[in-house]
Length: 156
Image (tube, rainbow, N blue to C red):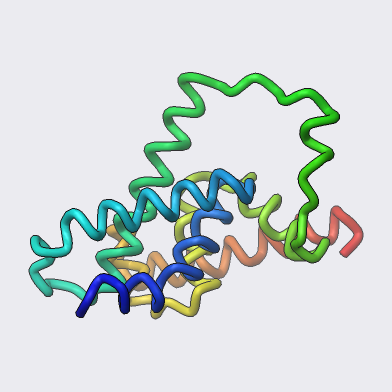
């Protein structure tokens, strides 16, 4: 498969996955772009041992996890309020709340639920995160319960 086709097919899904991790539009854009740079650089090493989507989602997940670890070690200083207010957010309030709630989950749960929201098959999610299918199903159920509770706490 050509890189251009891969990019067109997976860009939005990878962007949403990154949004689930960082809950920041610009950071998610950067992470998704970095993911596709890696995909482009390593496409010739892809061995078809899994689906191309599984491979790309694993790259994106690892990329997001590295960024989260980097942010923990080197926290960004808060932006002045006037700068933060200048950028309009175009996401619906319920979607913003969903991303906020997902960002509060532990890292593995963020990966799992972000992939589930992309309609990735649970067998593929299990491969990406390195869990059994049964464990993945249980985790998805529990994560949905947590998110439902968080929505109720926020009056949704």
